[in-house]
Image (cartoon, rainbow, N blue to C red):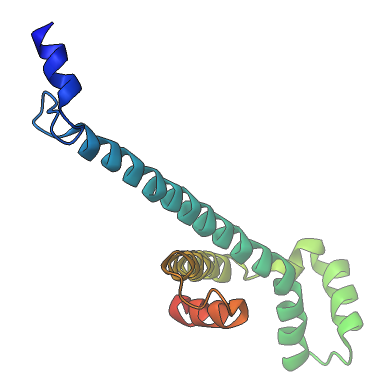
Length: 147
């Protein structure tokens, strides 16, 4: 009874926990952890999304690169439709993706780092209040930092 009466007269900063920290300090530490975890999860989402963007880039762009390479070679093709029809007829549809493993292995991590760092820098600029009134400029600055 005496201890509870003393606690009533003490402020929350004066009340000590078992570890010697004030109740107020523990509350502020708990509040500080939430934004950090939120930023970490969002950064991981950006990195994961960037990796898949790299995969999509190669998946869409590789057939164009295949056609360009065949047109530049000395095989005598005159048009891109001729290259595509000859490749599919003689080598199958997967011929359009020949040589895509190395670009896939290089482009996917590069895009994940690029998009991940862009997202983190954009969130840091926004949370610091830098360029909030000019979102286009904020995107340009975040892109420069991310690049």
